[in-house]
Image (cartoon, rainbow, N blue to C red):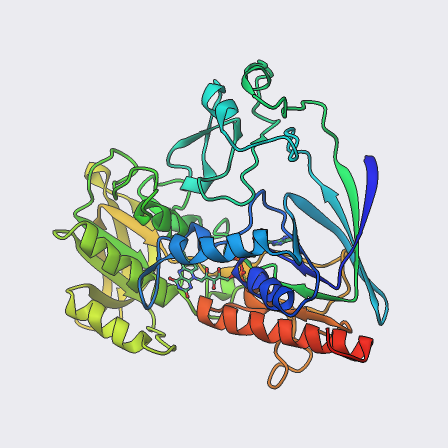
Amino acid sequence: MKSKRDFQFDAIVIGGGIAGLQSALDLGDQGYTVAVVDKDATIGGKMIRLSKVFPTLDCASCITTPKMSSAAHHDNITLFTYCTLDNLKRESPDRVVAQLTQKPRYVDPDKCIGCRKCEYDCPVYVPDDEQGGFNMRKAIYIPFSNAIPQIALLDAENCALCGKCAKVCPTDAVDYFMKPEAITLTASTAVLATGFELSPLDQKPQYGLGRLQNVVSSMQMERLLAPHGPYNRVLRPSDGREPDSIAYVQCAGSRDKSLGIPYCSRVCCMYAIKQAMLLSGALPLADITIYYMDIRAFGKGYEQFYQNAKAMGIEFVKAKVAQISQADDQKVMLRYEDQEGSGGVMERDHDLVILSLGMVPQWNPEGICSVGCGQDGFIKPAIPKIAPTVTDLEGVFTAGVASGPKDIVDTITEAGAAAMEAANYLKALNGSTA
Ligand SMILES: Cc1cc2nc3c(=O)[nH]c(=O)nc-3n(C[C@H](O)[C@H](O)[C@H](O)COP(=O)(O)OP(=O)(O)OC[C@H]3O[C@@H](n4cnc5c(N)ncnc54)[C@H](O)[C@@H]3O)c2cc1C
């Protein structure tokens, strides 16, 4: 590994999603210096990848980009993107140390001006995960148009080493020989905001995800609905036709003991209802059905949102879907147990099926940090009822989905609370205000 770099801050925030950014901004605004570490090449987490957000239907990008930008331009905040967290340890009451590896971008961040000339000239096309895999990106690329930082990275696995990017770069930023770099961050407190991943469905092949082209995940549907989505409209992946009949399968990866995910992921009912409403705007003639076990519309204004969806003509069928399979004419057949109406096992075809996947932790601290986790794998608050952001590691706090499924409102609230706990910890150490 290349030379080691050491940095000193008041606080370290692990995770640059909306939780981590809010905690960092709240600490930074109080005068504390903060390092935000993210394993991705951009900050923003899941929220920047959403279309619109329930229950207000605000454009996700429009409300997340200003937060990302404020953090990036804040005098007290330093971003460490595209970094792996190798170790996080409390060494003494006033010293927490994070060891990172800066993964090589093969583009010098100090030289890159984000002009994308390298991207335009690159001849290699790779499926773009940022767009649900529906369209292609280049082997050297900026993740998306409002990514922060606007620095290109080269995907070494797919690079053809043709040299075109290096030749066209006006600042000589491409460096094919870049090496990983060790970074040490030292601070007095830390906030863990590592968020979530969608629940994997490998153990549920009967739902067809990854096998049936017209069965997509809820995150893929966010991209199909997003203003800068892969097609700029909602199309069925198999043949590019507009779907006339769309189905949501709820609790696909939550409340399912067979997957080891017995808990409710709390946001899936609401995001499915949100997407269904957006779809009925985008495709006014389409029939939209939500197959659900229970609707959990728990937050302020959420029940009304659900009632509005029903009034718009979205059909809700209380049923547990058992199997999803290929039907004629590129349709998808759902086999389900109807729990209302006539009851019994039923079958129905749809043009497009969306699986409302749940949330599992994105980070497993084992071997990296001694913070305690619950049986569900999420970070366990030391006193869940009255101090939900305090962990069992002294002066280390948690915010957002890192400690359990929650929506954006609860994530932001928790991020503020974690920042307050961290600030109080710093004040107690310093014996004065910042
Ligand atoms: C399909 C879908 C639609 C949704 N729609 C809505 C909606 O409309 N309204 C609403 O209120 N909520 C919605 N949500 C929920 C919302 O996405 C979450 O509440 C929110 O994103 C949580 O933010 P977070 O920062 O806690 O986690 P994340 O957004 O997951 O961010 C975590 C960050 O931590 C980073 N990270 C993880 N591990 C490490 C590590 N080891 N080292 C460094 N960095 C790390 C990640 O790269 C990421 O940037 C939706 C969720 C889904 C799945």
